[in-house]
Length: 164
Image (tube, rainbow, N blue to C red; front, side, top):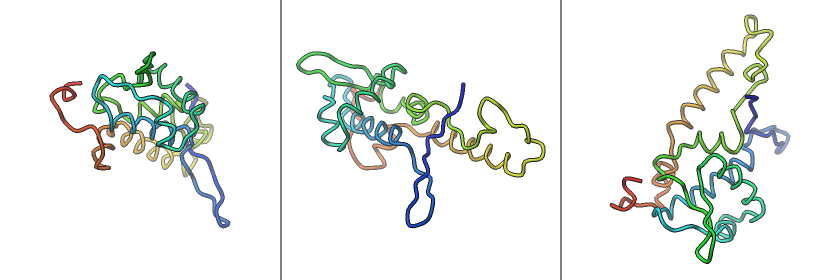
């Protein structure tokens, strides 16, 4: 699989900064909004998410296609329709979300599927490799539940939601 950078470079006041892509930022914000309201039964309308998160409804729909394909969310039709998490927020890792929206994370071309011609003599290859491994570990160890509870919002423990 070819890796993609989830970062873009932006210039501010003469400095370049790395910034997460809008797909990752907005997709994660939308999922956290759903996680805060998770009860295993109620779907959240995309219009509500878009309004509350200040994101275009059309853009969210594009992101939700990717998230549905990876079975992170499901769409519910009808008057009470919208989207809901397929699993309890405790079971959805940020790594799964990033993979669904972006694919594999890469920081340098040498870490993608093509390999590295200068691996043996490159002074930075090990740095990029360790950085990728560290970020992968953090994303894999962090769930939507973790993020919601750290923010002090939403999905509180209840018998109905405790076991997924």
